[in-house]
Image 1 (spheres, rainbow, N blue to C red):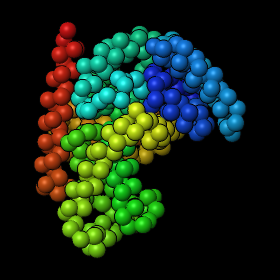
Image 2: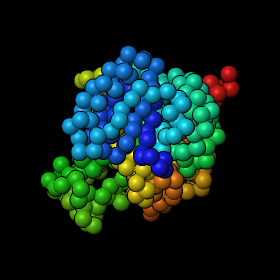
Image 3: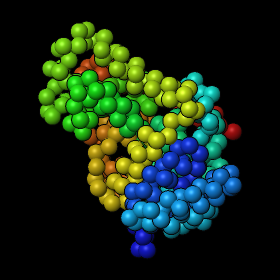
Amino acid sequence: MNKLGRNVVLIGSGFVGSSYAYALVNSGLATKLSIIDIDEDKSIADVNDLMDASCKTECPTLVKEGSYEDCKDADLVVLCYGNSQKNLTNRLDDIKIATRMVLDTIPKVMENGYDGIILLATNPVDVISKVVQEVSGLDHNKIVGSGTNLDTARFIQYLAQEVSCNPKDVEAYVLGEHGNSSVALWSNARIKGISIDKFLKNVGDGEKFKEDVLEKIRDKAFKIIKGKGATHFGIANCLVDFTRAILLDEKRIIMASAYLDGEYNNKGLYTGVPTVIGANGCEKILEMDISKKEQEMFDNSCKALEENYKLAQEVLGE
């Protein structure tokens, strides 16, 4: 950690990046926030706007237009760049575009001596996490993807609404790809330690309910995008959770895109799993007991990600 404070470099100040920057400034976690964006007018405007906001916080943050030289003193680099979400029908459309963005930006980060954690929300986040690791050469644990953190928040939200309770009392997880092959872990869903199945006895067809919830989780992003062009508030707060855990070394268990090396019977890829997040990034993956059906679904999700990564390899091999 930098002795002078907690310095964050944000690369990409679009919908997600600017929302994260605003949430970060309000949190007071960062002493300094440097913003880098290909659109300099946009980044300068965000800096000026955020400095106004910072004046109204308990712990003001110095926000500045950044350059890759700021990575020399950074405690955390956050990637929020990506293609416009407005016209996307599938996150996989973004793989080659995002891979080229990684090839353009990550070497500039590394040539300035950065050796810390890279946190990213760039979609498709599982595939791009692996791309960032390969291009950066950093240890696998130093790449932290946002993974199924937002999917898990949506799962918890729907369960809390169904049983009319506080979301903080719900324990539930979504495993695997942040995308179409994600796996909602019903076998581990609890409300204050009580199995979710006990709460669903009065919903009629329990299996139909579970299918409907999974569809809602997967489709919510597209509904938001259809309505306003992008999803950004939810993921911004998810990224602040990661930031807090990393900068303060909280050792929090968060659903993240982490590198599998045999956990859950899969290896060689990044995907959403419960992970201890601290100053060293993805410090440990926790293996929960999951049902046979859930394991099969997770295996299929991993296979899909391996196939998706081949599209990135085409760009990396150019």
